[in-house]
Length: 223
Ligand SMILES: *Cc1c(COP(=O)(O)O)cnc(C)c1O
Image (cartoon, rainbow, N blue to C red; front, side):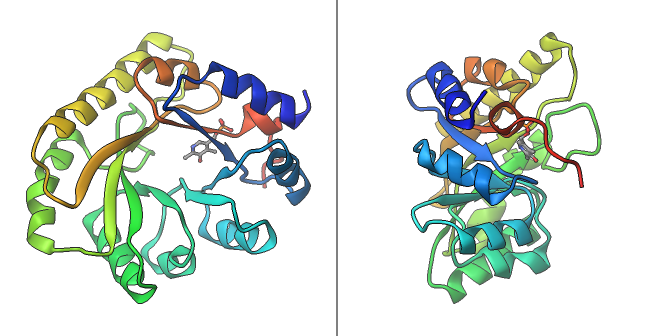
């Protein structure tokens, strides 16, 4: 299917309040331009260097999202322009983002990545750690980051029941935090969950941002 048709087909499935991030990792510029011409403006990358290169070569009105594991020494490269970092998985990383945000005089929007999958290869905070964060954050006074929500990746499995259970659990945590007084730094607005193979399940559980690559661009050439 042409890229523009894939984007339209996916967008048609999303409820109001849920936005599509086109994940461009390993995709050539021509494919991204095709998505852009179809009206797509939110793009995601899982590597800092790729984000920087693509940001430089493509139109300014694209919002670039960092969705993959981020090393602290790479934060400086993306801090000037990144729209949302989905993958905050430690307080030290958040402090680094805050430091770089201050250098560029901006407040960088972030999501906390929560480990919901059974695989232990996926990064993120545990539920227990997330619940302790509001107090820890209030003690730190970070003024150049904003925590706008949570992100999670379900287990890569054909067992849909498992995926439902994991997304449901993340939504429960999101809703729980939303109802608490989590201080000025944390505002639960975005729930980033769902990829090509499971975004249909994720939207049933309240996803506000789906991160879709393969279902738009086709299979990636693995590096
Ligand atoms: C690659 C990637 C995606 C998109 O994966 P697809 O299966 O191609 O849709 C989503 N989120 C993250 C964090 C990724 O690294």
